[in-house]
Image 1 (tube, rainbow, N blue to C red):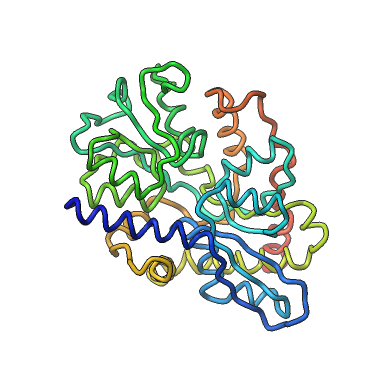
Image 2 (cartoon, rainbow, N blue to C red):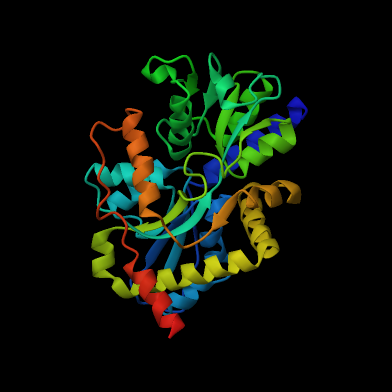
Length: 340
């Protein structure tokens, strides 16, 4: 990719990050009911939330309730909004949720939304072809201790390699947003990345990055949720019918996304275009879509294994216990009602 094009792409996705601080709303058919705000990210593995918005499922299920939608640039901002009560329910990665829960935060995982979507890639000239080649090299992730960071570091530790965060020989560059990953790869500032999708695929297709570890070979790759639907226990107890309506819309969106790949990718691309005035290529989106599973299932065992790995890597001070974090009783009851 030419340098000018990289700069253009970065400026485009910087626009997305700026737009993520703004509200984009839609109103249901009622005018007097207490409004509910649903959060999401403009990412490919948030397809269920995006489809729920684009197809009108949330408004349809919430009936006369007012509903607004807010997109977020990262998990920390999402959790802060949930903690302050300015956000009621929404889609986010499991890492921030687990960290918030373990710190005493009020949060419940109601459903899964997607699994997978982590790709380990290296720059074309890095000399990294496998995880064994990371000694003395550098890698970047969106955040220190984030889902993707833990997935890569635990695999490196199994090979006897550790990051410089704990005195090891592998340099970790933290808080690198996906658009900046492209610049750092092109300028030779980083050797590898644990990247969320579709950004990992974008690096491969546009910058000839090497695929070091495919999404289904990454630690917990096929079973760890990359996106979950969460709310606070307080909101769930105070507004059970609204929560149930959101879950019904969510399941409709999951079913639609699983059965209608082309329409789903178009919806995600349209949303990104609305925010940035640019689109991913069909090739990038299609290949990235193949590196994740859209599902409402959520594996509590996989979440606990991820948390244990985070503790083993010294991201957590105490051995984690996630009992009480996952509550899928409502969505399970909806499935039972549907099958009757």
